[in-house]
Length: 474
Image (cartoon, rainbow, N blue to C red):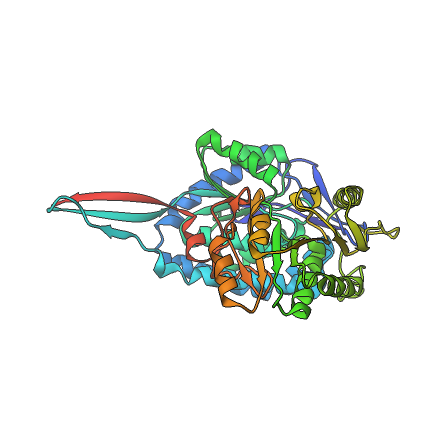
């Protein structure tokens, strides 16, 4: 049975307690390993090691920090099979998908390494003739990185790499559902030769995580998670006025115009909804289809969704895998049942499987209304509710009438329609004639309750900096 230890101050540490966190494969429900739960004392020691290491790390020229990140990218790429194997075991992903995620983690690490010579300040004109205003970009200090279960390898490096290149050090808390892959990343960190204390990865309870996040040395907390988790992080930030960066819930609307390529749109939407069993913040969560093509489009959605088979992707990678746990499955099923009670029509799916594993079938619901819970709340599962509309203005109004504003999708062949939606959609992203994919050179940021700050690209990298204005009289 696999047993992983925490990684702090450049080494894997012997646990101070007997606390173990059990890890199960959601496709089989089998126990696949344990990780040591860090004690509060171990976690605080890791924060202090990160704070000490940051003094030296920030003093390195950014180009030298980039050398370390390139070595880490090499180590991650080399370790991708091992990272992928651990991730597949704990998440229910196929080995190929899990390994590819590790490869992408190496790529985003290398991408941020290449920002080394582009962390720029500003020279600002002064109102006084013999004076210059200089704005510097500086690291924040120690960053606490709270990682979700759904894409834990990629998201870990999505946060760690920009934090490091800008001169910060990190404490990483992986999800207790998927911690084993994080410790394979820790092995790559160790092999890469990063200075001790720069990256620390520890599994821990919620109480211990709170002790870390409220430590005075932690200057920033970055989270990908639920709105509820985001509220907790904001409470943590209040203690020491730490900077929050939050990527929270989503309820991606897809608007299907009459001139859309309906076959392509249906294939894309079903792929988005069934990838990792719909457990993506940007997966399609509600479909608005024009009344003139509603019947044809629903038939296409039903055909493609009905064709998706579920099962252990370790056996057949073509199958749709499981949800993270049974609580998630029961919650989703209850939402479907309430939608049916409110008047929705079940086209396919909607039944709890009797086999082992936390599976739920792709489920298509039609005759949905804007006021239904299934339209208002994030499902984070393979559920696709459909709402009919008459005019584009009506579709936009419904798409924008929502608590979330992370991502959005439009299918049309009319550039005027595309520009109208681009200018009026209330979301951090709009994807035209494709589904979301979060290009790491872009900027992934949500509106409304979907978050504060953002990830990726120049703007995501600058999230990990603070400014210093120097007013220079001469």
